[in-house]
Amino acid sequence: MEVKGHNGTVVWDGTFITIRRKGFLARATIGKGEKRIPVGSVTAVQWKPAGALVNGFIQFTLGGGNEARSRFGAQTMDAVHDENSVIFVKNQMRAFDALRSEIEQAIAARYAPPVQAAAPASDPLAHLRQLAELHAAGVLSDEEFNAKKVEILGRL
Image 1: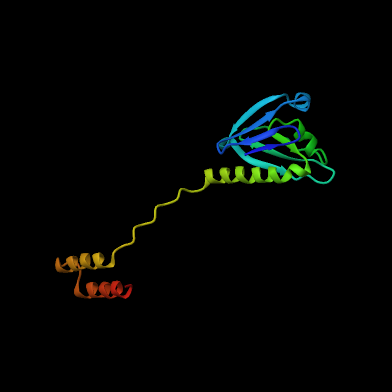
Image 2: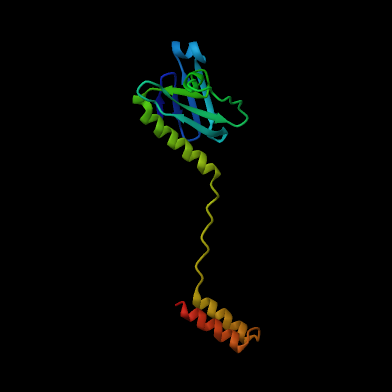
């Protein structure tokens, strides 16, 4: 997925977030070039939607990064100078929102517990045979065997 913003382009390939900058605006703010960020290094995605009169931005927070809180009304202007942010205008917002969703899903998947394999369904008749063998060997009493047998047959 490739999404072009006002001061850069973000490319998401499922493993890396690549921020590409070229042209005068890039040179005047952050510098032109390319930054590749492994999704495993991203701890948060900050989002500010664009409005009718203001630009929005997407910002990637990295572990160990030095973040400063913006003063009121300066959030977008501070993002212009942040190398992990890309500014977008209102008509680009839908594409950036889709990008944000995909990246956040990838981040969440990294922290999701592994899926456990389902325990194989037990065979009630095989279980009943095992109980019969234990009963015949004298491990189970008649009462214990009959109670378990009724329980197993009741589930069939």
